[in-house]
Image (tube, rainbow, N blue to C red; front, side, top):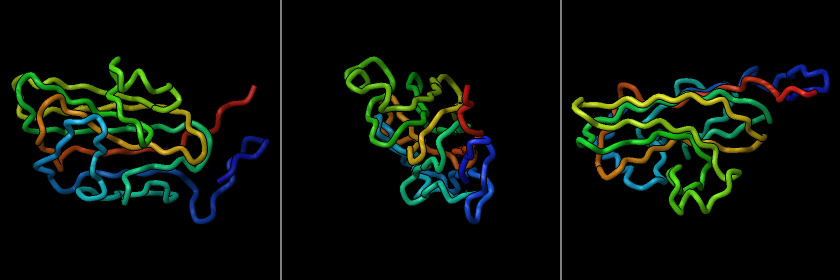
Amino acid sequence: MAISRSRKIAKRAGSTTCAFSVYIDTQFDAFNAADANTTIPYSTKGAVLFDNGGDYDLSNNKFTAPFTGFYQFNLKLRIEQLTTGNFVVGFLRQPGYTGNGGSGTAHASRSTADIIYSATYAIRNSSDFNTLESNALLFLNKGQEIEHGAYVQTDTAVRLSDRGCHFQGYFVGPKPTA
């Protein structure tokens, strides 16, 4: 697919859209997200529902933007066995980012160009599970990669449920010209 000067979108060979949806299809009982560099393991515990355009690589859990423009992403996590008082963060980021989005040195040492950040938080109180959902409309350059990750405060083995973890995205359109 290419965007012409007349702002029409030409079809890519074999594909008319750029859209994907992956999900966890096998419960993951010992998900260790105690460091901020933890990617959701769709490659080992998940499946691709659809991938129109072939832009999501299940082997490395990354989406690669086929065009420069706006993309809509939706993510959801269902975390079980989080101990009381702990929290979990679900996020989108560029691969290689190791901060947690806070104001600590890991985050402060990175430039804003190094991360695309969309986060959602949940604090365990009395329920057996926590569900985190987030949506983001992001501007990406062609070839830019995005991955879905999580960080858990101190628990080292929470459960990722097979009843509610997914990552989805689609191309919205090019940046309008003046």
